[in-house]
View 1 (spheres, rainbow, N blue to C red):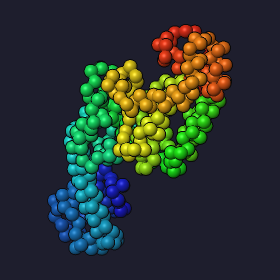
View 2: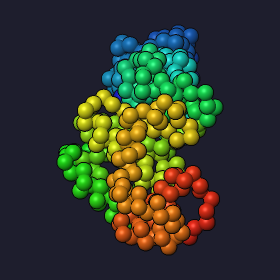
View 3: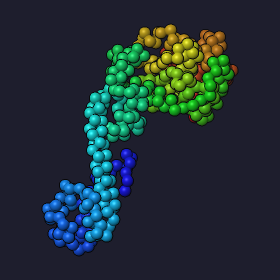
View 4: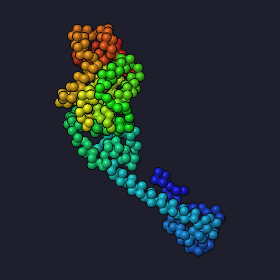
Length: 367
């Protein structure tokens, strides 16, 4: 049987094993059979024990003695030689892969990628997967990747809850998954139309995650939902992916107000910052885990402002907030007037006042 790289056997079958079966099937003793074909018993034994190969001359003798074509014996010998060579090469590849894995195991988000079933546990397969996910040709590039300015703030963090390697792994997996998605052509001028549709989807709140994803795709924006790993306090990310803007979200809270703000914050980066820089990448951590200088950066302030004013018109919010009527009935009435889900209004109140403990009947769930 011929083999390919994808069907390499665990063990190569030597023709001596087949020959032994035939000797037994024909009721020969090894001594008698050796004499019949003109070999010493020790020579026959060497063939049976895979220490001696079958050549063309011996194949002809076997043909005459056992009525099995000489070509058959030579084919078995050829396949054995090829299989043995393939097994040796594969074993060498495995040894090399094991050594490579030892080098990179602590430099990548190993546990996270295993949990997401990106890594199988086989070093040969996983080496290939890591190169694809991290978009590197060799593993020396991983060190350069970790030193990129966009990720430097993770390494500088003194917070024990942050694992820079896991954050970068989350980011790279999102980049990889986004690269396999195709959307319509992005049109910056359709911003207002998109925002109107998104507010309507959020207000209705039915099959929200899928509907938002499909709507963004129609407007040329990729949206990927990706669970986060341990010590990865991320909310979202925005970046360019093969010529299209992309958003990644961790959905760490199953709350509509959190989802809506993160979505609009990342849209702020897309409409305010990405058009002028196709290399830009904004990784937004949970506010309480973020460094102050990043939260206060021009881009983050602009993205926050974009989210606030496009979810609730600024002048309407100002009048409502100054009235200090934050009971559920007033919130629901204001939300209806502004065509937004009431939990988004209440979430804005809690964020602005810093008070989150007031009782409410408003539902925050994502449906």
